[in-house]
Image 1 (cartoon, rainbow, N blue to C red):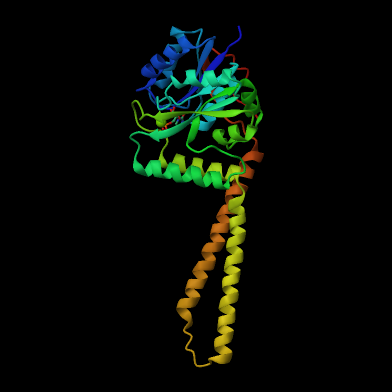
Image 2 (cartoon, rainbow, N blue to C red):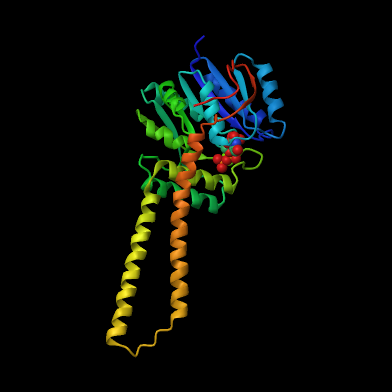
Length: 320
Ligand code: UDP
Ligand code: MG
């Protein structure tokens, strides 16, 4: 039987929200105009999430499937795993914590019926998130839009509906640093937004630590822009010009104002530290890119599957 809709939800230590999540999602699934599968991806949770997923699958074996990754691989990889197994004509990705209201899926489906291949959710406000997080997110999306080669819409997360054509392209992309909202924009097709107010997390604590968010941000910049590399070049040119000016100044003093008292220590120390930092920053930027090349050429599988329910898993890993 063909599946019309797949809903993919990554789960990392979400025992506090799973019952309510299932209740809300089931309500939406019952309103959808076709057969639906729910793919829950356990991203190496350490709490009771996995047994709860097993239980849901036993309760509703026709609609619920789960994948359990062998350890915590991170949100983007968990979503990728879910997309690998999704069979629907349209595939929806949403967060487990109900910050992506499942009811919005109905609006997305309506747009999909209008002929859009990608319908992404764009938040017009965020409730109850710290000003620090809101500010960082606001600034970051705008910087990314300036620097990225593709047009990545601002204030969108991974909450979206994708046509199976788009999912097929996404699944065929071998890259390991998966910034899904960027890849999704890169793929193209007809894309549109539905807007919503982002509610606070239903229960539990935020699973994206500051470190994970920062790493996602750096990843997205490096994966979608070469501007940082060029910045290293510009920085080099700038410090070269500066040294030229300094050289001319010293020459001038020497020739025309031989009485100028030049005390060297401070100037030399500052110049040394300045040049050192320029070099180290450039090296660091270069390292970010080279490190990614290294990650890619190793060609390790993206994830390891520990256990599945309700799906046929031909192999325990996926090699791109
Ligand atoms: N998540 C995951 N693996 C991780 C971190 C988070 O699968 O290592 C999932 C988490 O269970 C949730 C989604 O990613 O479904 C978003 O996480 P969270 O709500 O904590 O972050 P936010 O996007 O709200 O900052
Ligand atoms: Mg959240």
